[in-house]
Amino acid sequence: MIKAIKKKLSGKVFLITFVLLVSACSGTFFCILKIMPSSYLDTLNRNAEAQSLELLDTLSTYDNLDKCIKAISDFEIQTGSTVWLDDEYGNTLYPSNVTTEQDMVTADSYVTFDGSNTTDENVVSTEKDTKAYQFSLKNGASYTLVVITDLYVVRQSTEVLLSTFPYVIVMVFILSILCALFYSRFITRPVLKLSATSKQMASLDFSGRCDETRSDELGCLAHNLNCLSDSLSHSMLELQEANAQLKTDIEKERELERQRMDFFGAASHELKTPLTVLKGHLSGMLNGVVGYENHSKYLQRSLAVTEKMEVLIRELLYISRIEKNKTSIQFANIDFAELLRTVIAELTDFISEKKLSLHINIPDRVSCPLDRAEMERAIQNILINAIRYSPDGEQVIVTVTETNTIISCSIENTGVKIPETTICHLFEPFYRVDISRNSATGGTGLGLYIVRGILENHNAEYGIKNTENGVCFWLRLPKKQ
Image 1 (tube, helix red, strand yellow):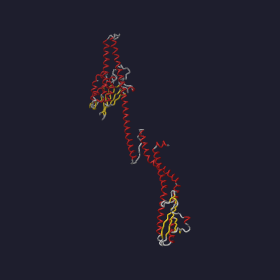
Image 2 (cartoon, rainbow, N blue to C red):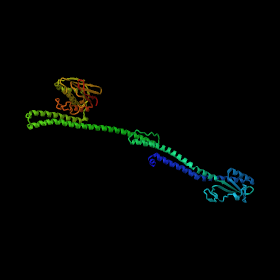
Image 3 (cartoon, rainbow, N blue to C red):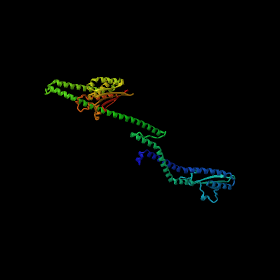
Image 4 (tube, one colour):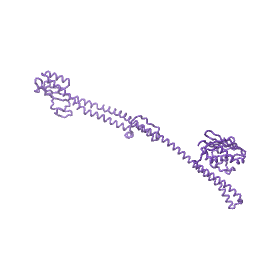
């Protein structure tokens, strides 16, 4: 129980409030019990003395004893006190049936309220208070008036208070418990809400709200806690977004690194093959191996291998340059239709050699922001692929359309299909649809990879798809970068 009280604010407030209320109420009751008898005695004595002096003034105006006795009798009835009237010789004149020796209580010696014996007139007996007064009538006769005030009622009231003590204690305990419960709940309720909200915030849950409408310090604290929760929630959301973006960037960087490593591995493999061939030719000629006596023949083959390596190295260097200078693309407003016509004109002999039919559907002028040299290289690679992989006598169809925001271009070559499973790999470096890398069509396998890099630098959409008659490469260029 002690541990529970230590851990809970409401338990501490309840216990402290209960102890304070019980102490205050009990202390108040005992103070009343201690102070009331003496205060009551003082009040009774003052009232009795005032009334006695008033009676003396009245008696002093009479000239015979009968009137005095009548006034004394009325005084006893009114005040409830006992009165003796003695003459100057000590004889008791009133009441007539009581003698001084038997019942007279003098003021010379009596018991005080605290139980000790005293003769001081200013100290009051626990049972009776006796006062003696001298007075004279108009006829000159002297008398002694003794007034006895019964103080038993004081002791009786004290006994009544003591008898109610158990009931008072029970009521004090009950009221203290109820008041302590109410007070502890009233004080700790907003604190408990603040504690619950702060606990949610500590576990990074900012959905909790403090609905306190108070204008005191607790209300101000609740408002500040709500503001803090909103700020932390906003900051946490921004942090989560930043973390998600960072994670995406890291994954992208890892993917780029993986692609770079794959590219270098593939490039090394592509260079290794012609180097092996070239080394074999040279070793065979130098060592006089049978079959390599015709040096001119094998030197010619070695030259062809070297030229192929030179093309491959140039393309590798070009890829390295476009990846390195992605942010340094020089955009200018270029006529895309005129650029296409220029590239097609350069490949006219190649088209005639393959006996292909060329169909061009290009507007007179279509302008958009481009890097002319880069885009010419991309279009050239696309057209060369279309021409190279088209059977003799087929068609190459070039179409350009435009909208308010996009320029669309498609280059379709008929008479050939690409397996659907391989289309997604066509833009990977060194990937060829042909199983044999020594295909008669030649090529380094980097043409479409270079196209991908150039188009991505131009924020273009692109792809390859099979059509009813052949294969179509499509791209969409934005009119604004």
